[in-house]
Image: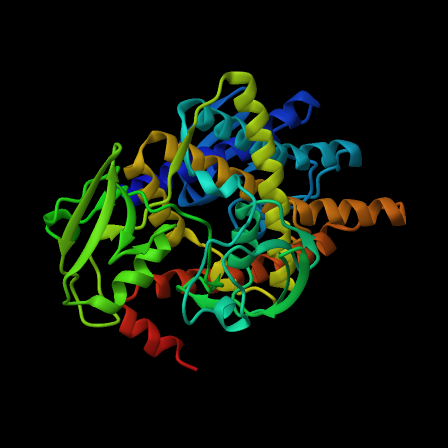
Length: 444
C-alpha cells in the first residue's frame, strides 16, 4: 500500500508540474486553456475557474492541458476530448514556447528537488568521488578473466575519460552483455582490454567484478555469528589472520575462506590496543565466513542553499548526459530495454524511497522529474518533442500541415507509445515474479 500511495503521490505531483508548465506558459502568452486535467478519460471531479475546467479524470496515468490553437494533442488521440471543428492555430513561436513549457518546468523542478535533498542531507558512498583505482577483482568475474589486477587505474571506457568510480560504475551498469573497451594504467604503462560485463539482475545490469579499495576496519558485524561471538566490534581494525598481514577488507575474504570449520586467530587494533582473538568460521573449506559485513563508508552531503542549488544543477547535467548515453545504447542495441522502469517498478522504488525517509523520496522525485522532462522532448509523436518536430517541419516547408495529417501522425505515435508501455509493463511484471518462474518465462 505504501508503494501504491507513494507512486501516485510522486506521479501526481510531477504530472501537475509538467502540465502547469504548459498552462502557465499559455496564459502568459495570452492563449486560452479550456481544460487542465490530471489523468485521461471521463471527468470524475473538478471545478471551473477563469474559463478553465480543472478536473481529475478516470485514467490516472498522465494528464493534459487543452489549449485551443495548439493543434491536436494526446487528449484528442486518446479520446479524452472531442474537437468539433478545426481551430485557428496559434503562431508557431507561441506553440513552440508552450510545448517547451512542460519539459522545462520538469527540469527546473528536478534541480529544485535535488537541491532540497542536498540541503536535508544525502548519504553517498565516499569512494564514488575518488579516482577509479582497483582495490579488488572478484573471482570468476569478467575483469578477473582478463587479468585486471588490484592497483590498476582505469583511464577510459569506450574512449570516454573516466575520472571517478561513479563514472566507471554507471558506464559498466549500462553495458550488460555488451563489449566495452577498457584502458588502464599499470606501473606507468597503458594496457587495453576488451571486456564484456556480465548481465545480472532482471534489469540486465552490467557486472565486471571491479571493486574500489576498502580498508579492513569493521563497520558492522552480523548478530550471533563467529566474529561477534568472539568479541569483534565495529571500529576494530583487523591487522592479520593466522599471522598473515591484512591490508584491506578483501584480504579477509582471501584468508578466511579456506578455513571454514577450522580455528583461526585474528589480530585487531582497538583504539591502539592490540588484541588476539580466536574463532571458527562457519561453512566448509573454501567457503569460510565469520559474519563481518562488507560496508563502504558513507559521506553525508548536507549543503547550504547556494551550494545545494549549484549541486542540484550539476546533478541534473550529469544525469542528463548519462540518460542520453543509455538512450544511445538502447537505440543501437548496446543496452537492454530491461533497464527501463514502468509504473509497477517506479511504484516499488517510490515505496522503498518513502520507507527510507523524506529526503530519499524528494531525491527520487528529482530524478523522475528530470527523466520525465527529457523523455517528453524526444521526437516521438504524441510527446511534446513530437509536436516540436512537426512544428520544425512546418517551419522548413513554410506552411502548416493539415489537421488530419497531424492527427494521423499522432495516432501512429500513440499506438507506438502504447506498445512501448506494454513492453515496459511486461518487464515490470517479470521483475516481481519468483526467481524460478522468472527463469522459466525468460528462458531462451
